[in-house]
Length: 273
Image (cartoon, rainbow, N blue to C red; front, side):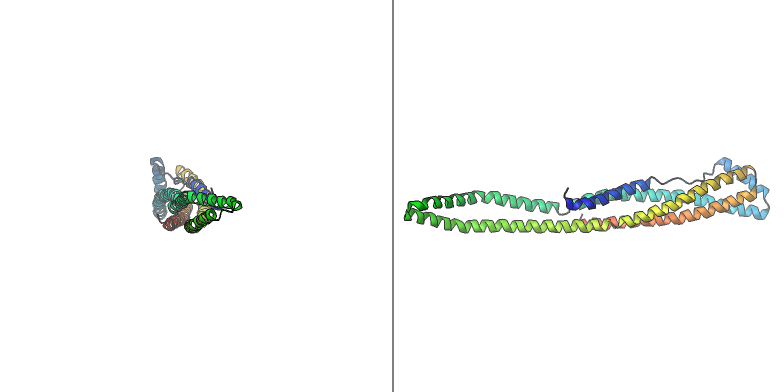
């Protein structure tokens, strides 16, 4: 690989590794409401007064809804992530191939022109060497004929060399344009990095909240086994709060994944594919 592209390639590779690592952090909701849990809760709620019972059932219902939403958002995040990972692979390949066909065509044109005119150049060089060798013979007629041939060929050689220079200039221009377009597309893709940092931050916050949820869920199950409605209510309140905060983090993650999709789409557009 050209040294010019190595730093950008390493950045893109790090993006892929980061995307892959973040995908593995997805998990199911910490609260799994089984028939046993439901039965224990119903018995606990039945022991509370009407006001407390209504509050418990409302919190429990919201917990069930938030838990389901949690799993739905996990699926949405996973789907967006996987789509982005696949799209990133495709766009990296597209960037690598920017204007490559045109550069290959012009490279071939330069090579063909050189091969086509090489016999002329060889003939012209041989003629001039012959003229140089025959100068000592002082054969004016022969020298005059050879010099005339040399002058005629000189014009053809000049035209041939100019044609090759023109083709080489077109090739250089195409290579420069390709380099600029690749750099621009990779610069666009570099915008993914800030989104990844934000996703990592939100995942870290959600992970900390998940640990709290796991502890709260354990406390809740212990409370309903003992039919302690007060402690069950405290655990439910803490879990509902935690789930709401996690939902906010996950919505931000979804937004960042969507931003990544937009960045990849913008980079693809720059490739012309």
